[in-house]
Image 1 (cartoon, rainbow, N blue to C red):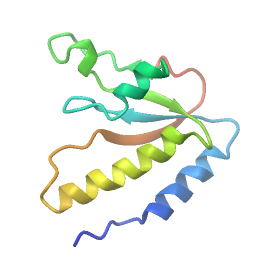
Image 2: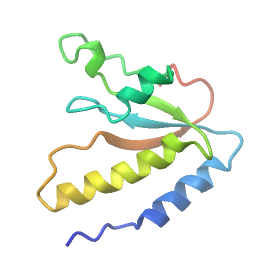
Image 3: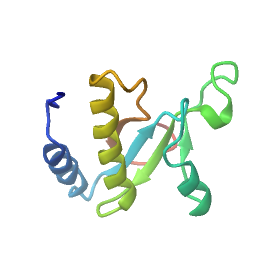
Image 4: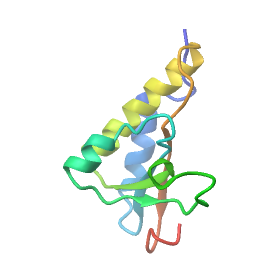
Length: 114
């Protein structure tokens, strides 16, 4: 059985500490190549995301990795953490083949230059 290096509660705690810093903004890095876990919610809630500027021949616009802005208490943040844990467990068990949640970023300033 897969035992993650960090427990889900440890990951949540580390992210909450970053979210507590008012000088920082936060986003989840999503790779939708093999499936976008937030596609329906993006459409229904008309969420603003920031696609990474990759050349068209590398990835079509709908398959470009993107940054999904989140904040403290955001259900999208909690969902991203749970999904990342599930994807990692599946991969380590030999059942998974990709991870759509690639990480969480904290940044200052505008998200666009990222």
